[in-house]
Image 1 (cartoon, rainbow, N blue to C red):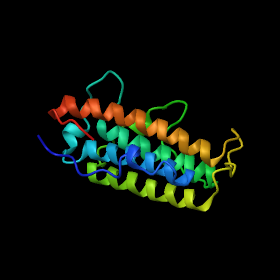
Image 2: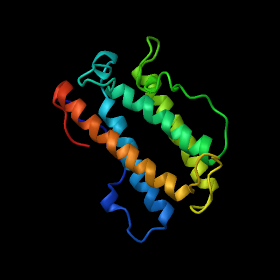
Image 3: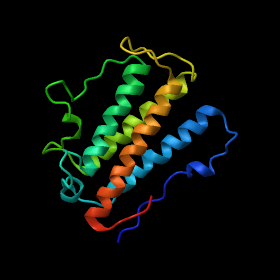
Image 4: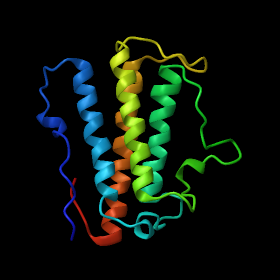
Length: 170
């Protein structure tokens, strides 16, 4: 059974008296890396294998989270105009793996999205309001939401990876 790569510092090991933004980012980074670890060492076939009724696959989770990072941090917080793959007619498009997409390519997309998110996080105070006319939130809310979103999908990824090849752990 493959051993997943090392993850960032565990959330409970982060200094509980660290500045709030550092604490939030520490938790988020833990779950971001946990998701990457779940596809580590897999070829395209097992990473895209459908094991549940929904279109959810391990690689689909990585792709989805890359787009969600972009949507919340770059688009809603920083006000950038970026394309999104989903629509009212195709709400799960960000989970669908296209024939030309690879494990390496989508992990790189996710890492790039995370790096851009971290740059946005560094640029704003936690109380700064997002530039999203549809909903009034601040950076703190976005970070907490992304911890929830990423942790939930990391849990899905845990189960999918165990079903694929028995790999367990962070």
